[in-house]
Each structure stands twice: as C-alpha cells, then as structure tokens.
Length: 102
Image (tube, rainbow, N blue to C red):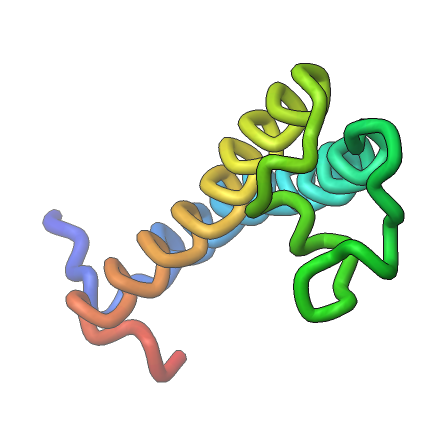
C-alpha cells in the first residue's frame, strides 16, 4: 500500500519536528554569538555611538571587530543559516506537495 503525500500528513509532521529540532537550538546559538560579537569590538569603538544607524548589532557588518569578534561573526552566520534553511526547506516541501494549508 503506497502512502500518498496529499492524504497522509504524518511525514510532514516528522519533517516539521526535525526542522524545529535544528532551528530552535540554532536560534539560541545566534543570540549567543551575536552577543559575543558585540563583546569583541576594537578598543576605542563605542557600542552605541559608533554603531551604524545606532544599532549595536550593525557592528557585525563593519571592520570594528577584533579577531575573536570576526570568529564569532562567522559562527553567528552559520547559526543564522542553521535557523533559516530548515524552515525555508520545510515550507518549500510543504508548498510543493500541497500540504501548506494543513
């Protein structure tokens, strides 16, 4: 007996659980590494006043970081990918199989 992707949403629930198990810890890693980026600014750089558009997290996109800050920025980028990619892939699979409205 074949399983129809349209009528059996169990596989979609499993896919959502796997995506959540990857995305949730990745979100906490994003928070941890972004804070670590802010803690490793070059000497003399003020957190709020020298930030582009007065947002401290925009220091991630400047050269105001020490080597430890650059490493933390790279880890934060991988954590962002670990958060976004499973969610996007799950939504893409759901849209392609017609399970997006369930």
